[in-house]
Image (cartoon, rainbow, N blue to C red):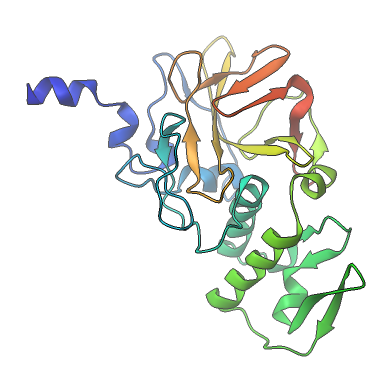
Length: 255
């Protein structure tokens, strides 16, 4: 009976990182450049359990959407939602590679929230319904200051501003790190965590999301077959467990 239970467990239960999640027979990981965002995404650790928690420690009501859960903090505030999770992963990659000058996102009002200014002691305060830069605070690059910067970004940026920053890529080859996004209120965004290919060139991709309220970032199941892989030729609509995107929702990062 114990052996049967083990056999019934999803293969993602035994994976320690995103890159360890098994590909279907005949597929292998697509090539990525050393040090690239796509390569880094594959190194992210997975939690040993497959349960999604909200920022307040409560269980997410829908526990059927995820194939695995990333071992990344969600914080104690209702901030790290969908677009925030995408920006978090991008910022963490740049921070890990000490590319601090590239960590920057626009707020919904158009203000550039750049981490380089934050390191110099600048902060962003809301004045007359616009964010203004005030440079009289603590300087540095500690993890605590970086987390505070991310909370600012999560508070003032979202799907609308992120969609403006990204480059439409409908019809282009899908790559790890790409984003499916629909700006608005509500809007949604999911990130391509990995891409696999077979000998004939057919591709599949893996998606991750956070959602509302803020919750653990998790690998999404494909509603069509229950796996964590989506076919690149998904048609005019990309159906995920909690959102359906138009086929033109795919975007690349500008650099």
